[in-house]
Image (cartoon, rainbow, N blue to C red; front, side, top):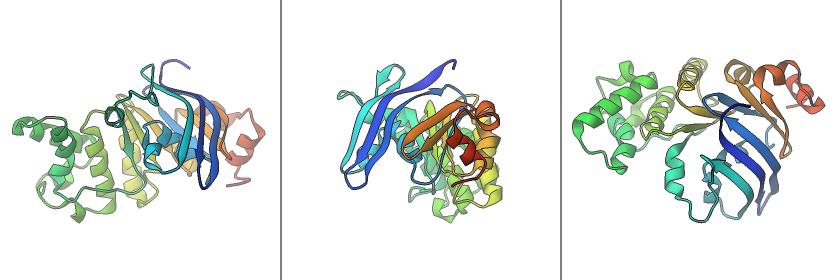
Length: 253
């Protein structure tokens, strides 16, 4: 692999109530590519994804061992600024959760928290990120309407714009299209393909067709184990491991 933005070394995650979730994971996440994490339900995909931005900290009883290196520093070191990590490594969740405020204020919220106050700068930023998310033309005349009035697909694009507004370097997508209709899902996919020129994207998906469409790099998880990883063309066309071949062939889900 060439440049990597995140390096995971010896990662083990255990939940108090459910036991081991992932075991001895070693993998690098390539820069400015779309990495798809695939595998059957309950295999550790989301746990691996959320380990990359300290989001597992929010779960009671979780135990994490190993290192996740971002820009050469272990994000699990005791002196890590977790808020800064979550700003630089953003999350687009499975279901959209717009803040209970206007469309404009949803996008402006993060920059305001980080000190941006000038109205002209905020206006420009809100327009830029709504355009990037493919939403500007649909909402430009109602920026001060409640975000809750948007459709689910529009809300997900709003959440994408909100996440991009704080200028992350990595975007984690946790089955970000699974709650959307096909047209809205394809819109999000198109946005992600355009964004990889400037962002490193990690996508958990249970839809192999989506992984084939989007991924440059693939990680296959099974029962908490990283079975195989590599360039998408190689993994899909010529997997090295029998379990990978069987999953791609649809022999188990």
